[in-house]
Length: 467
Image: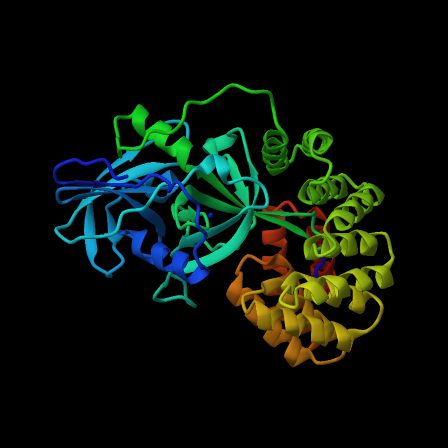
């Protein structure tokens, strides 16, 4: 960052999931959302109600309901409750982990009748197909009574499983707490279980991200459920051995990037592009990896290739803008951020990045306006508060600056840069001891976070103040 800085078989007394329909008829977004509301549950740790996740009602037998969820939602062995769509609370009877995947099945008892999810053909959930992710955000100071979050996006890749069994990527916006929720196709059928959202950032000098949902396809889940004796009455197709396809390379590249193997990621994205040279996302992501290795020109070339394929890719404009800014082309960067915002006026990162570029060009008022726009879109944008505070400080508004640093730290108490900036302003306004205390906290956090450059700068400020 730049700081200033997811035919019912007939059994007596058993209701189970339905297989996909023969004729795929797309439902409206509102119809799919209603289905999601009826099949999605919230799972809460009774020992710590702030810890929660989501799940999908996948089987009903007698008074027993089976919920499919992410294993990490229920891995701590505490006592859990399932909150059903009618807001009833039910004690979890059992938790069974599925092998080789971040999935588990939990059971609870209820005499009530709840809708059971239909199973879709996850093999058809391929790149560029629309999917919806549904789940309940975690409880926070801002969200005291979580409601279902439902968001539309597109599949990016569906291929070979990587770490934790994740084998499908999608670009839907999701929130913490939605893990274990349903990924649904346009027919309202479950095609995957949402695992987590991954935000892969480019270094510390910009706000460029690959934001990707990671999930496990429902066919993979069904195979693992059968392996531990959990039968919901639907048989997934047999796995047919084939050579690696573009999606396999894409998912493997993503996993390598996540482990900071940037060269390995570049090699796999390149292999994916040899098979499918029209994959704009692969170009964009390879550009991100190249940028992290310092190859800004190579990154710009990849972002430009992505934009030739998809001229409406706001992320590629945003990423190219950051690479141009890193090379000193602030005006070119601003042009790219403008293009990103024309495509997506709600892109908080593009406002933030444009604000950084404007500040570096001396346009502090323009920078403040952009940071303010970013904050309006994302009120929890700690770094935008921090950078707005710095711009205000540079304009002489020290009290406004301190207010922004306070807000940044309320959102993120571990934001070392905000402690450092606030410490400087406090010292400038005569509160030398308060300034030193803030700078010492910044030094402690920056050392813990491995930010050597910031750590050294803060120590130098402390030495000067103590002279």
